[in-house]
Length: 219
Image 1: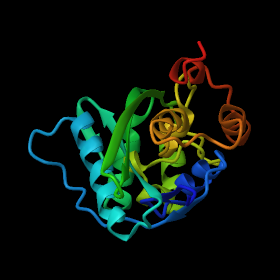
Image 2: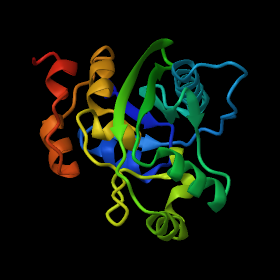
Image 3: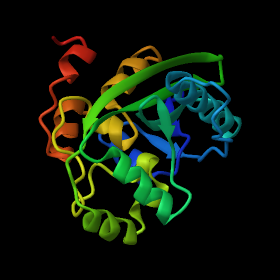
């Protein structure tokens, strides 16, 4: 019997790093999908639609034994979906809007196995309180170019900017791949992590996670 492996529908270095923490065997195949927000589309519907579209698009190049993971992350404030900024000016505008406030990060994940059509999906919503950083800090950070490929124009893990005041939810989800939600989905496909995933995740992120027991049913 051929061992089942994973195909990650992304070329994001962050998602690859996070997925590797579970010890799963995987390859990558980024999906080229239109990320335009549909008229009146709710944040939850948006990220779930794109996660599924990415999984199904990359599945066209999957091996028979592979389960395909699609993921999409969006920053939500005042009901608005903030995607990746088009340029430095938009990045600065987004960061000013988020400054000193709590917003939400929605991350949708979808797993699709083309061999038998099995599909499962989940959503992680995380509250993210931003610190009251200065205009000079914004300009310095934007000048690095880092915000331009990030939803909401920031990376929570950036060592220089460090935009977040505190966290009490899923840190990995804000980076783009909520481990515990993914592990819960992959269990439906008969795939379990080969490592102590919560321990690896917390060590990698230097973060004491308060939510993994409830997500994984250990609470």
